[in-house]
Length: 233
Image (tube, rainbow, N blue to C red; front, side, top):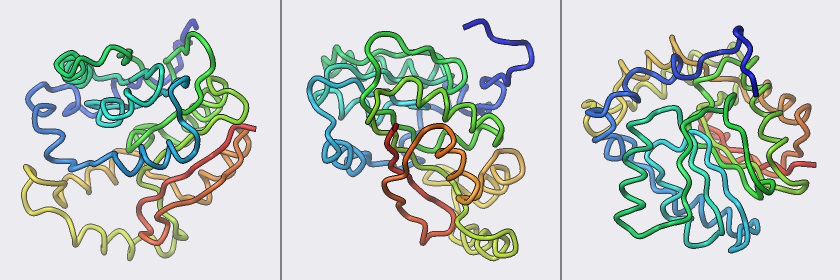
């Protein structure tokens, strides 16, 4: 694809910390992500040994590393070279040969080969404004086979605009006190000011217009985070 000059540059929106090797070295400890639950969900949805899994915004590849033994091909996509370098080294150290690291983003990844069976993303879509989220959803639908699964999680507010301030303040009150072990209030406030959380009631029509059927919604009770399991129709 020839990228138009007016396209959003995802590298510029990745957050400078994700491009810093020093920050990336402590990223997993800070996020505390255990992808085992997501992998179990994907396997329950049919992810199997003949399938292709694409992880968009993979970071250091927590899911690809544990999913690789259960599928034929894993494509780990991220705009951050330091993140992908960590994943590549871990895959080599573990003797995993079916993970492909691709430096790209939601708007620039060009899928090759058979359509994906599953596309996954965790806490990466908030780097895109809503216009570009809608574009990304259509691109994801195009890389999936009919009946394929798109499962993703991010900071999506399941409240109305008038309720957002209360929900956000409750969330910020439980922020980490130190940046080494979690996200501090200051870091979360930067996210709110400079990144792009979206209301769930805006996300859902974007998904449907892109050609997805929403099969399940997860975590909306938090009012801040939400996950969606969608089928490409």
